[in-house]
Amino acid sequence: MTTTLFDKLWQEHEVKTLSERQSLLYVDRIFLHERTGSAALNGLLEHNRVVRRREHAFCTMDHIVDTLPGRGDNTLMPSGRDFIIATRGAAQETGIQLFDIPDPDQGIVHVISPELGIALPGLSLICPDSHTCTLGGLGALAWGVGSTEAEHALATSTLRVTRPKTMRVTFEGALPDSATAKDLILFTIRELSGAGGAGYAIEFAGPAIQALAVEARLTLCNMATELSAFTGLIAPDQKVFEYCNGRPYAPRGVAWDQANTHWHGLQSDEGARFDREHVVDIRALKPQLSWGTSPQHAIDWDGVVPHVIDAPDDATAVAWQRAQDYMGVSGGSHLSDYSVDAAFIGSCTNSRLSDLRLAAEYLSRTGHRVANSVKALCVPGSGQVKRAAEAEGLDEIFRSAGFEWREPGCSMCFFAGGESFGEGVRVASTTNRNFEGRQGLGVRTHIASPLTVVASACAGHLVADTTA
Image 1 (cartoon, rainbow, N blue to C red):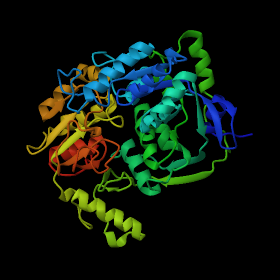
Image 2 (image 1 turned 135 degrees about the vertical axis):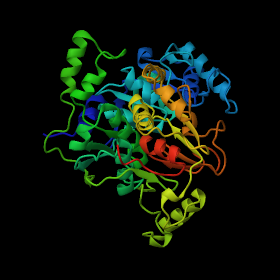
Image 3 (image 1 turned 120 degrees about the vertical axis):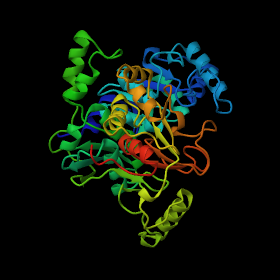
Image 4 (image 1 turned 135 degrees about the horizontal axis):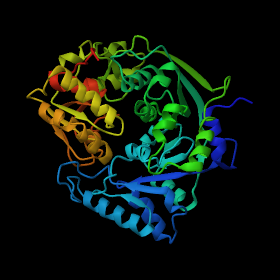
C-alpha cells in the first residue's frame, strides 16, 4: 500500500486510535517560550505533576525579551519582566533545558530548534506558537498548540489530535534567480488563499523544492500556517541529513547510522494518494510584496493594487476596502508609489544566516545605503546566527549601510505592547504577518523577502531587486 509522508509520520507516532478522525499521538519534543511557557509549566507545578521526559523539553527567551544591546530582564513590554522571571523560575523548578537571555544558544524558538538538532526528520514536535510548522522543512511532524495542550504533553508525552486531510502542492518549473523561498510561499498563499490549506497537512514537492537549501525550506514551511494548514512538510533528503549531522542534540555514532537509515524512508511513496492536489507554475515568478492586511494580499512587486470593484464577491470587497483604508493604498496604484519609513529584517521566517547573507550581499554589491528617511533594523534569529554573521563581517556591512544591529529575538515581528515603529509608519518587513497592528498600533506592514526589504530600505520606497 502506498503511503504519504504525513501518513507515515502519523502512524509512527500513533499511540492509540480514539475515533475515526482522532488519535493519541506521542510527542517527541516540546519547546516553550517565555510568552506562554510559564503558564504551561506552572500548571504542572500547581497540580504537583512532573515533566515526563525532561530531556525532551526545552524553553527559550524570544518573544518578549528586548533585542536592544545591553538588554536584561527589563523589557519595553508592560509586565514583560514578569513573564521572563516567571518562566525562568518555572523552567528551573521543573528541570527542563532553558536557553536564557545570556545563553550563547538563546534565540527564536523555530531558529534554534533546527540549528541545535532538537528538531530532526521524523520527530514530532510541538510549541505554543503557530509557526512551529517551520520544522516541517526538515521532515518533522511539527505543529502549534495552546498552553494547556503543552502542559498535557509535558506531563504525558502525548496529545489527542484530530487528523487532518492531506494535500500536495507541487511546484512546476524552476525558481527564477530573482525570487526566493519567501516569494514562493507568498505566491502560493496568494494563489490558494489564506484559507486554502484549512484542515490539511501540506506537503510541498517538485524540482524547485528539491533545489532549495535547507534554511529556505524552513522559510517555506514557516508560512504554511498562513494557508491555515495544520502543518507543512518537505520530504528530507541528503541536504537535510548533512545539515543535521553533528548538531548538539542530533544522534551520534551507531544512533546516527540508525536514524539516517530510517530517515531515507521518510518520503511519500510513488503513487501515494493525497486528498487534494495543487500544481503551481512558478516559471515566471517575480518577487512578491503584500499590499494589504493578510499574507494573501500579495502581488508581483511591479503589479498594481487591486480595485475593490474587481473583488469576486461582496465579502472580499469589504475586506479589500478595509485593508486599503488601513494600509493607505488605493486600487490601481503601484506599490513602488509608496515610500517606506522603516525596514525590518528578522523573525522566525527570515533571520537565519542565509537571509542575512542575502541582504548583506545586496548592500556590498550595490554600495547602497539606507535612505535617510528610513529606520532600518537587522535582528539575527539566534546567538549562533549573530556570532556567525559577525565572524563574516556582515554586522559591519549592515551598520555601515545604516542598519541597527540587534540581539537575537522576535523583536518587532509582533507587537505586545512593547517596542513599535509608530502609528502610520510604513514598514518593509521580512516577517510572516501583516495583520492590523501586528508590528504596532496603526503600523502598515508590507511583507517580502530579505532582498526586497533591503532594496526598499535603500530606495526609500517599495521596490524589488531583480538583478540577483
